[in-house]
Length: 162
Image (cartoon, rainbow, N blue to C red; front, side):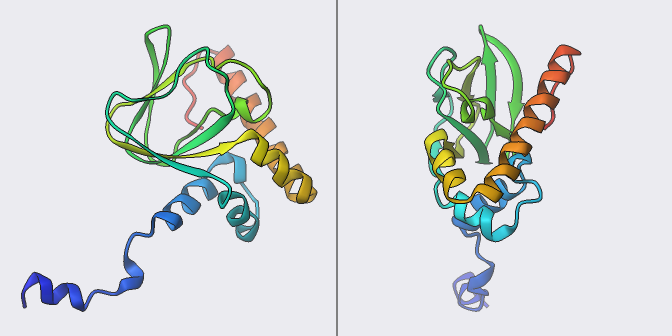
């Protein structure tokens, strides 16, 4: 059987669905821990998918922070003052402080290789929380826990793996 004939018999439901990959990535972030799947899906519908080429900046240190992100594919480096802090890959979540405050970015994010990243903008999270206060409380509690854990690790000089 040729590869083209084999393709005809593949299960179409097994194909990698970009929307499903994005939902799964967000669902597995600390932000959405213990949040019902149906609520997660409603929030993820508000996210924005972007594709980056190697060397392209997602954002630069000092720019206004307005969104958090989760990596769908590829690798992203987090750098501050030309010093690499971390290298992140698929499923990693970063930029969460921007969901709480309007402050400059404390680091830059740059694509180490081609990458696809999903962004959640602060005003969209705020709107979601207003319409779903119960889920919003859980999400904001998760966000607070994440920030406290990262602050604790930073104060101890540890690298975060959240």
